[in-house]
Every structure is written in C-alpha cells, then in structure tokens.
Length: 468
Image (cartoon, rainbow, N blue to C red):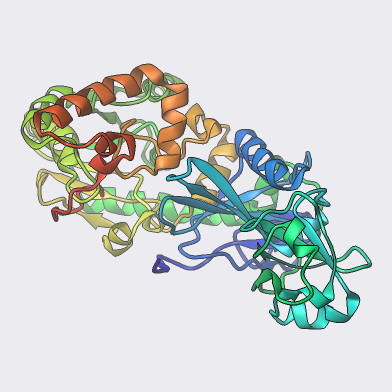
C-alpha cells in the first residue's frame, strides 16, 4: 500500500526524560533524537486499554506481556488492508499489531527492540553464535546454524531469533514448525524480516512528564493557532461559531478559539447516529465552558436517503452531504445568513485534508467560511494539549475507538466494527437490521453483511469529509 507523506514526521525522543517529544529539543534542554515511523505519522498516545490490548496479543504469541507499567507508549497508524499500528517505546518501534479481518484475529509483528522489554517464553529460536553476523545482514535461519526451536512454534508464526548468549539478533517468520525443524539437516527454518537498526532506551515516565517535556512546543503551537484565529476573524467580520463533533480535534479547536476570541457558540451537527458518549461529551463541554449549543439534525435525511441509495460506502459517502452539510447550510442560512466556522481539520488525517487550504468554503455550503486553526498538528499535539488543559475529551478514546462520528461510518476499519459489535450491540443490531432489509430487497449474498462488503460499491463520489 502506498505510503502517504501528509506532513513532516514529528516524533522524537528525549533519552534524559524518557519521553516522546514533538521537536528537536526537549523542554528539559536536552537534544532529542528522531524516531523513524511509517508515514503519514499521525502519532497518538496509547491509553490503558490500548496497552492492555497489545499485551494480550503479545502474550498470546510469546507467553509474556510486552508493556510494563509506567512506560509511555506511542501508537502510529500504518496504511494497511484494514488496521495496523506501530508501537513505539523507548524511542523505537518495538512491534506492530495488525488485524486480519478474514481470520477475525490480531497478529503481532515484533521488532528486535521488543526483547528489551519482554523475554519471550514461546515463539523463539536460538542460533549458533557463528551464524549471527549473517542473520544480522538479513540471511535466513538455516538448519545447520540452528541450536533450538521452542516447541510451540508453528509454520507461519512470528518468532524472535536469539544467539547462544541470549541476545536478540533478529525477528522473522517460521517456515516450518518445531517438530519438523528438529529433523532437518538443511533448508530454511526462519525467514528473517529486515529491521532497521534502532536505538531503544527503556525508561519510566508519566504522561504528565510527557506534557512537561513538550511544554515549549505546545506553547508555540497554541500561540500560532490563536494568532491565526484572531487574524481570520479580523479579516472576516461575520457571525462566528466553533463546529463541534465531540472529537478531540474540535475540542482543541474550541479551546484555541475560546482563548483567542472569548465565548462563541458551539455548532453540533447531530446525525442521529452518534455514540451515547459523544452526546454526553457535547453536553459536558458546553456546560464546562458556558457556551451556547446550537444543534442541527440529520437523522430523517439519512433514513430517507438510505431507502433510495442503500448504505453509504467509502467511495460513495452520500451521508456527509445529507446528514451534515445540508442541515448546516439550512441552519446558517436561516439564523445568520452566513458565518465563519472554526473547524478541527488536520492535514495528517487524509490526503484530501492535506491538500485543503486552511481557510475555505465547501462548495455545498457557500454560506459558511471555514477555518482550521490546528491544520498542522498531529494527533499527539492535540492529545498533549488536551492533557495540559485538563479538557473533557470524549471517553471513547480510552475504549480504543479513535474515530469519533457516526457509529457505522463506512470509513471505519473492520477491527473497530468488531469493538462496536461487542460493546454496543443495540446500535449494531439496528444497523444490521437496516442492512438486512436492503440485502433482501436486492438479493445480495450473506457475505455482503458478514464481511462488511456494504462499505464499498465502486462508484466515485467527491470526498465531502473535510467538514468536521
């Protein structure tokens, strides 16, 4: 899958504070080192539920958990067929986790640095020290250089490769199971996976420490965003609002605008398809900051459009226009005539948003001038800013749901759908019932629902998702 550079890769690490830093210098004064991650690099903090999930996968494969208490973990979503995330600890990518939807399971792809945190008791091989130099250069583990294969190893498993002194030399995928490997005199035992040499220095730190390490950077980002908001408002004297979705980006934008201009209304586009936690967050934020809450409704639009078009898909997202843009256009026209909306758009989210100007008009809502104060922030900037401000972010982020919006958004991955099916059965049952009616009416196979094939149909439709 093509790698997308949507902006500069920001992740650095301070080995003095043992913290991720979003620049070349830590607030402690120490220089940081760059941490190579896969583009686009929209890095974010791992919450407790993320760490528990990663530990569960690692333990299933290798018999021990990976992440110890008190160590900051950064996640980086990687382009993949469904969902894949790199796990960064100690200033290095220590593994990646990948969801395999057809098998309904998670796979873990370890890097050698993971062995600094957890010594596997399953899923490893030991090689003769004489073979180490060749293995480090990318050679496969061959039968003549093999000392031991742990008994649980099966063909296709991810494995660690250790030398006789207990040092992790490399990682790879087993080509044969342990029983067969024990009988082989020649041939490939493990196909080594190439891993770039990485510096990893484990150390404890809290997220409060991380915020402190990034304080200078956060101050600079905040000041620039506040200046942008004031400049746009001065150049465009008209009624103003903050477009609020219940997600982290719109909350950070709201805080910036509040500091720049004072209290202006929140505009919440209620599709009728939001999570319960999102509705609660919208009410909480309005109350916390004493803001007027203006709400539009799009549920009826969705129902009537579904009856004609069927479910929205990744390549035919009629839902954004019907449930958000059209109701917002009508409200603005009736209430203000036109307005300036500050929106939590970020370029690291997608190619379309990277190409979008920082101030624009959506062609479907010409009465709304939109501006993006945090256009150049990563998800990590946003979360650290919210942590610093002790802002009430949506609790869904702590439940491993990182995309806040309609619960059945076709742009979500199937890994997230599995979470929703488990934790929100009533919501998912209602959606499955709607899909079932369309399936029956159009004589579609069961896999259209069971494999989430409704998410794609092949039509081309413009991306209207730049409205948040």
